Amino acid sequence: MRRWVPALLLSVVLTACGGTGAPARSSLSARQALTSSPEALEFEPAPTRQELFRELARLSEQEEGQAAQALVLFPISQHGELVAAPGFEARMDLLQAPDAGGVLQLTFDGRTGEHWPEDRRDSLQGLSEREAAELVARTLLTHWGIPQTGPVQVDRVSGAPYAVAYVDGILRINPAFLYLAAASGPASTSASVQ
Image (tube, rainbow, N blue to C red; front, side, top):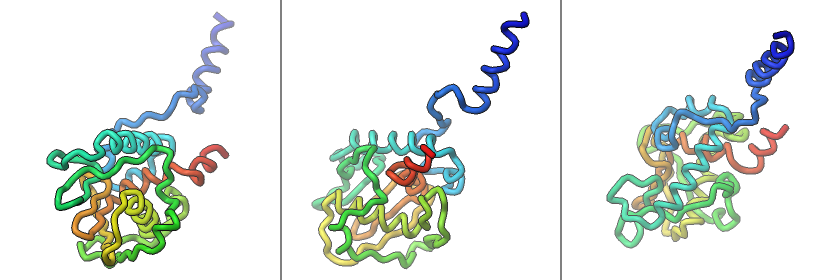
């Protein structure tokens, strides 16, 4: 009996300290995470947010090009129709705006009533929601090949059942998506390794 007690104690300590090596699993699905408050997602562990982002990326690739008659995560208007936007890979850093995105004119005046917070958040790689939204907007609009025909209004839509939608020159970003996108990418990866 004396031999297995120390082994049992060691396994309990390792499990309590996260020594099992098992990946973090969230009880939320990616779609449920989008309808959650961004503040709740902010306090999820980084590995959980990374897994939810990977799930959204997989779903974006699966939905790509589908007619948006059913609920899709990234609806865009294209040639007068609402379709699912081109998907993106999970390793794509949405907070690394391409140079080509610099010419896009974006406005954040909050016509919908939701203000973009300006306070910096650790879980957004030190950016504010507004700054993160600008980078994500530039990256996605460039990736989707949206032609610049005038300023693009960027609205904050908490609790929306989609991540990002582009319709009639308005880009609607679910702030919960920003916290998931920020969990991926070089800055968050190096922070989780340290």
